[in-house]
Each structure stands twice: as structure tokens, then as C-alpha cells.
Length: 249
Picture 1 (cartoon, helix red, strand yellow):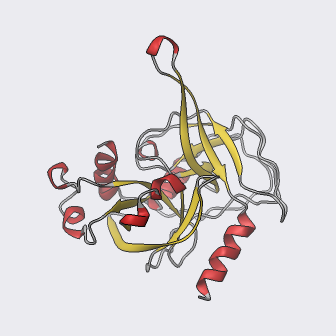
Picture 2: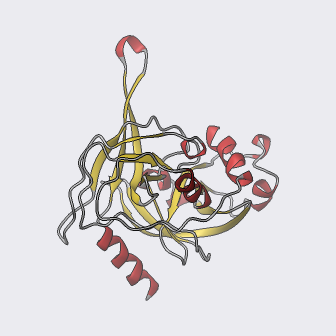
Picture 3: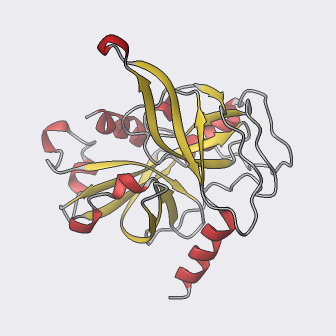
């Protein structure tokens, strides 16, 4: 149930605006307070349930006693001003039999809508969905023409970890992309938690690198020890083409 406690915090967040500058080089400096606020303003949740209407549950502050028994979900990343979101595909694993709802952060307020799945890539654990919302606070990707070296500062904008001033580094070098580049899996040293799945992994300037996919643990003598978390960076140009094509449908 951690995701629902995270949602309560998410609902109460107040945030400020910061324009995200573009950059051509990896930045190893810690993220600023402004970058953390930038991510908090864009914090969004995706809820998958058979219930077609969850508005009363949301408006009452996500009471545990009223949580739909079949609820699944995680974090979503707004990536356009017109309601397109990126998330991990496994967050939507039950979407074929259920409804997908998105909760979009707007300062101390919250927008909610039913969503439509646009594209899924289960093999690389990444997906795009669309909601009929205006989403002026959204993420831009780090430039696909630049590589991100191992050691680059990163932080996470998930529903759980994104509420904490926690940052780490890439454990994998992410090469620059071409038109033939497929999704790239990478590793970070931030211990993510339930509710963070599908959330944005960001550089120090709050530009989007990719989304969280999983967390890995070493289990010696049945005592879990965190090792690293895994993310997926899609082909940025392909994502933009999928969105452009979907707009024309």
C-alpha cells in the first residue's frame, strides 16, 4: 500500500516552476533545490483498476479503506504539453482488463482523467499513453545526440523516492542515439521503492534520461541487500514520431 501513502503526499505537494535549460555535456553536480521542485511539479501517477470512476477515492485523499481491491499502478512522466505520458510497461500489465487513470500534478491541485494506451514495448518495459489533459508542466529529454557517461548525477521523480532529497549516479554509460538505436537499459545506484515504477530518472538539470524499470537485490542468507536500480531510455526520436502519428489519428 506504499503507493497510496505516496499519492497522499503527492496530492498535498506545492511546487514552483523552473524552466529546464538544455545542455550538451553530462553534469556531475548535485541537483539544485530548483531542479527538485521542477520534478515535483511534474509528478504524476498512473492507476490501473476495473473501476471506471475513482474520483471520490481521489478527492477524499486516497483513504486506505476505500482503495479498490484490484488497484495497480506506479508513476508516469508527462512528456508533452498535450497529455502524453511515458511509463514502464509492467505498470500497465493489467490494462487489457481494466481502466487506466492518470493523476497529473499541478502544484497544490490535481488533474485526473481516463487514459488511452498509445504504444507498448513489453520486451523493453516501456509504454506511452495519452490522457485528454493540458499538461504544460512536462519533461524534455536529455539531447539524444549526446552520450551520458557513467558517474553522471541522476535523481528520481517517482511517487515515493521523488518526495525525498535523494540523488545518485549512473552506473552505466548511455551512448548517443541514432535512427537505428533501440531502447537502452541502464543502471543507477538509487534504491527505488514501490510506487516508483515508471517514474522519471533525471539528470541534475531535471532533464529526462529514462524511466525506472526494476530494482535489483543481492540475497545472501535470505537477507536482501540493495545493489542497483534499472532504467530504460527509449529512442527519443522514435517516441516523438509515435506521438506525432497518434496526434493525426
